[in-house]
Length: 250
Ligand SMILES: Nc1ncnc2c1ncn2[C@@H]1O[C@H](COP(=O)(O)OP(=O)(O)OP(=O)(O)O)[C@@H](O)[C@H]1O
Ligand SMILES: [Mg+2]
Image (spheres, rainbow, N blue to C red):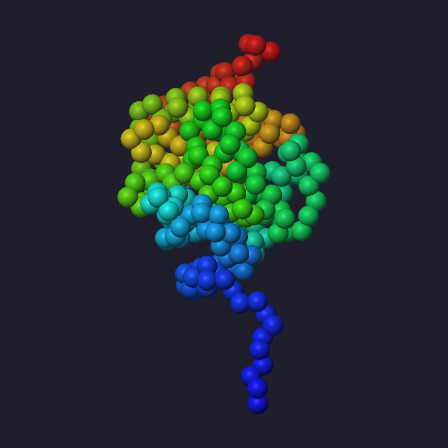
């Protein structure tokens, strides 16, 4: 009997190599995420996925390598999670997403997009945050904060160094002037090394037009000051808030 010739298009050589490469990861990533990762690779943004740096409820962060052997961080928001629905307030109230309606998956994409846009605002405003490199659906590629494949620690694990509080407060002020509030600022979302501390995790950060942005700012200031007070650095939250808001100019 003659062999049936498949009319299906053969996958390109590139695709086969990528599929091989993802055989292991495919148990970790869902299909749309795998396709997005493939697109990111085909566009030459990254060359290899290395290993997970962090696995969380909403997102996993991986180390990846570019074709020029540079390390980058790849944050993949989980599509199959209901955690985002609880964080709806950060999206719906944001004037940038006022018209947003969608399925759960679109909600996750919007969160990733918001993190990427917020990182771009940080870059322009000179706030210490990872440099945004690429966005694809639920995946944010950004500057890797670490050395020799190891991420810098978060402040909660190693404590603050001299000058850290000033740097963070300066960043909060610059951010506010750029029209943003982080809204989840704490020692868990600050990475430290010998230089100034870096603020991470920007998906929930809201524009000042959000009706609760001032409340979030107060919470951020309170969290940071409470943490530093534990190390003997005491600041008056009211004075800090007035300084961030630049009340004298209003
Ligand atoms: N740009 C980066 N470079 C190096 N490591 C990073 C980078 N971004 C995040 N990480 C690592 O990944 C961890 C989680 O990142 P992030 O806080 O952005 O995600 P998350 O959504 O809060 O995850 P979780 O659900 O675990 O809280 C950080 O604590 C840090 O260790
Ligand atoms: Mg975090």
